[in-house]
Length: 73
Image 1 (spheres, helix red, strand yellow):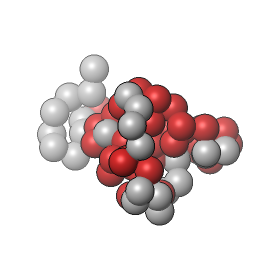
Image 2 (image 1 turned 135 degrees about the horizontal axis):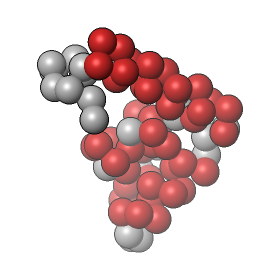
Image 3 (image 1 turned 180 degrees about the horizontal axis):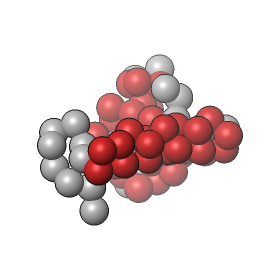
Image 4 (image 1 turned 30 degrees about the horizontal axis):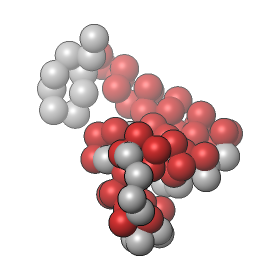
């Protein structure tokens, strides 16, 4: 999904997010991790990011547990 850096980019960092979005050279830029996250997030339409966030919320709230069995707080 193109909304990866917006919603879950902090799980793997902007390096993997850049590769998943098709910008493998993006992570080589000389700037902070936070700046890279913001840059990737700005490239995603708000509607796409919101739809992805809603889907993740649904998945995590389903049965009150995550896939790994831990309870959602």
